[in-house]
Image (cartoon, rainbow, N blue to C red; front, top):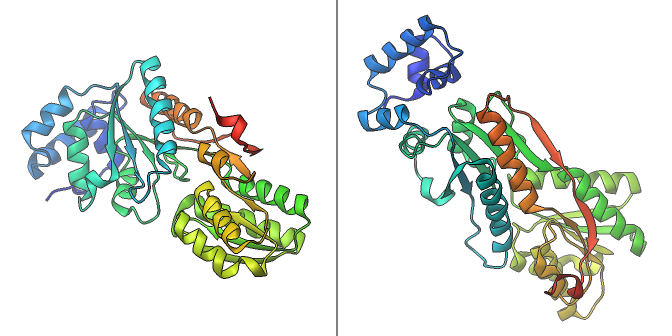
Length: 329
C-alpha cells in the first residue's frame, strides 16, 4: 500500500509539503504543487472517495482521540472532564467535534489511520493518553499531515503542540510537602505506567527530591492500578516512612492496604479526582484542571489551524488536601 512517505520520496519533497498540497495550503509554489500531484497520480496514492473527502474538507472539524482506561470505572472522571472542557470550548470557537478512541485504531497502519481521518474530514486532532508504545500514532504525528495537539506528551513540531502541567515539578512539590509535614526519611514511590511520558517525568521529580533531601527511595511500578498499589503497599510499606503515589487511584489502593494492616503511613496522590474525598483519610494531591487543560488544547488546535506553529504550553496546578466536605454538592 502506497503511503504519504512514498509520495514525498517520489516527489523529492518533505512529508509536510505533501500534506500542504493535499490540504490546498496557499503557501506552496506551483512547481511543487504540480510535482506532488503528479506523484500522487502516478502512485495512485488516494482512492477517489478519500480524494473527494479532501476536496470538500471542513477546516473546522477536529477529532478528540482518547485512550480510555477500560480496566476500571473509577478513573472515568478524568476522561469526562477532558471531554466536557473540549466540547464546550469547541462550541465557543465554532469547531465541529468527533470523539474517537485508541481502540478504534488497534492493529491499523499509519496509512489506514490517515485515510480514516481524511474520510471523516478531520482537520486537526487532540490526543489524550499517548505513550511511547503507541508507535503508529507517533508516526502520524511525525508525518505532520494533521494539525495536532498532544496532552501530557512532550511532542512538538511545526504542526504539533503539547499541553501539560509541569509533571516533574508537581510530583516534587506534593512529595516534598508530605515528607516535610511528617518528617520522613524514606519513601516508597509507586510509579505509573511503564513507557508513559507522565510516568517518566514524575519519576524525575521524586528522584530529584530524594537526592536533594538525602532520602532513601524505593520505586515500584503500579501501572496506575489501585489493585497493584494495594499489593505493593502490603509488600513494602512497613519498611518506609511515606508512600508517594503517581495517581490518586493508586493512593487510595495504598491507603486501604495500610488500614487493613492497621499501620499508619502518610500517603499522597496525584490528579485531584473527586474520589479522593471519599477515601476515608485526608491525603495531599496535585490538582490538575482537566477541563481547563482540554480547553487550552482546543484553543491551541484552533491556533494551529489558523496558521500557527507548534509549541509547548505549560499550565498551572495546585497542591491540595482533599476533604469530603469540599466535594459534596
